[in-house]
Length: 395
Image (cartoon, rainbow, N blue to C red; front, side, top):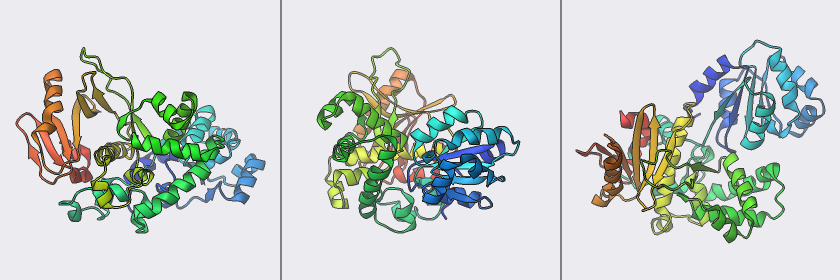
């Protein structure tokens, strides 16, 4: 098993709270992690028909069968269980009694907020990060001098790395399973072909400002439906939204979020990119690389149990900083370039930001392999160095 960065935080949370909710996309490793850490607890999945029937028909009796707690997987499938679970938690002083896992964040969070607020810790597990793969010896010297294209194609879902299934082979099956199973749990979408087209149109917009009106029109749906479908993709950890930086520095800035897919292989599959040759010639390569870096930073924060403070900045004249990272009082602008050779144009927006804000340091992450420290406080870092963690990179 590849050690997950979230392990320590999950153990700590189970010692502080009566229950812990572990959520994330399907196949991100939630079940493996929960069973590894809490191997002394019975494991039950609510996707099993007999277990589902017992829990839904007699929730009180179901919970009473496990007085010492249990790991309950896909628990959002039985919403009526949460009210009875609330009573159990209120009547005990034991910590870490139940571990709740689910791939449908919308339904799980909805039930938790209604019945278990203040009684439960809430953690997210995403696919592997570069840092986790590096610690397991699956990302190292072989990547130091290479372009990131093969990593973009394969992505970071555990089955791709544990079972050695190439991303272009595994991902279409994952998309089919996701649409057919998870989407229908959240909302009764009758025309799955339209939803599939919506996802593919969103993949084209990966790493861009999200114009929901234009997206809805192109997909042939109304804006309310587009908003609802976007919410499904966010709550299922398919995409995330990056908000614009909240300080405007007396400039008129954009207010729309940018949309990123959590995993690059999913985007490649939706765009029909299957080989390194196709990817290298694609107009989407730059946005895929940018999304991979943004996702990597988000995963590293979430897997430490932290709330990511990551934004982007763009003014009306088109000046843009890809990422703004806040940690304590530290504000670091991050530019992301998919080129393998450092070019003077890479620094244009960083220098504009430095003049605007008097920021002492900044970071440029690119697809090459040479590290540089510039006199203006800009650190030029190869993408591979993210495998040591952003904190070490900035220290």
